[in-house]
Amino acid sequence: MATQDRSAVLTITARAPFLVIRLGIQYLRSKRTANKARSRFYNELISNGLPRHHAKDLADQYASVISVKSIIRTIGAAPISDWLGRSGD
Image (cartoon, rainbow, N blue to C red):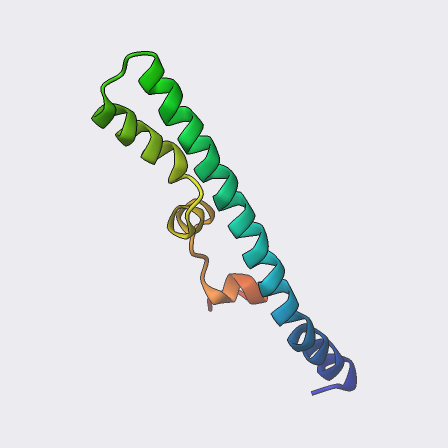
C-alpha cells in the first residue's frame, strides 16, 4: 500500500467517529421535529372532527417518514462494490 493510500485510510478512520456522531445528532433533531409536527398534525385533525383512531393512524404515518428503516429504504441498499467504486465483477 502506498504512503498516500495509508494516509487516506488513516484520515477516514480518524474522521469516521465524528461523522457518525454528527449524523446521529442530526437524525435525533429531525426525529424530534417530526414528533412535534406529528403532535400538531394530530391535534389539528382532532379539532377538525376526525375520529381519534383515524387521526392517530394518519399522524403516525406522517411521523414515520423520519425513521432509520424508511431512510434506508429510500436510499436503497447499494452493494459495497458501489461504495468502493468498483465493478461487481
